[in-house]
Amino acid sequence: MKKKNKVDRDNLQLDAYEQEIEDSINTMEIKPPDAAMKKRIKKLQQIAQESLKRKAISLRMIEKELATFKKKASEEGLPYQTLLNLLIHKYNRGEITFKLSK
Image (cartoon, rainbow, N blue to C red; front, top):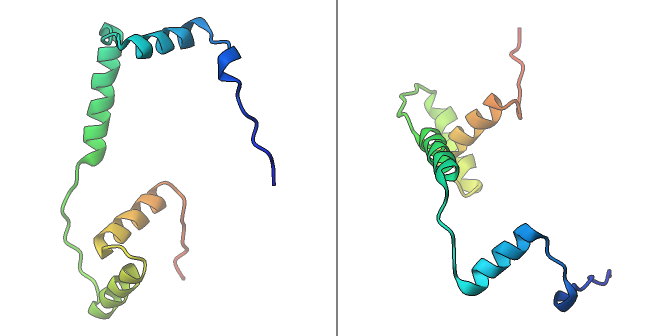
């Protein structure tokens, strides 16, 4: 078993940025974000909102296939819609592939 390296916190040297963070935490003087940071926060919030949008779809399936899929999703501890969404997401990212028979 490896021994963990312990950090000597009393002799730890911080750079100027780290020291600024440490000082603000110790004095509880958290600086408000500047204009550039506010703009970045807003952009990231927009990206997050876009990624959370959901669209209801209708899908026709063979009943037996759906029943089997629901059973397998349940065995995985997931709602079948969540599993289907996960599979589509992974397929779109190229994490899973399949070949159609000719």
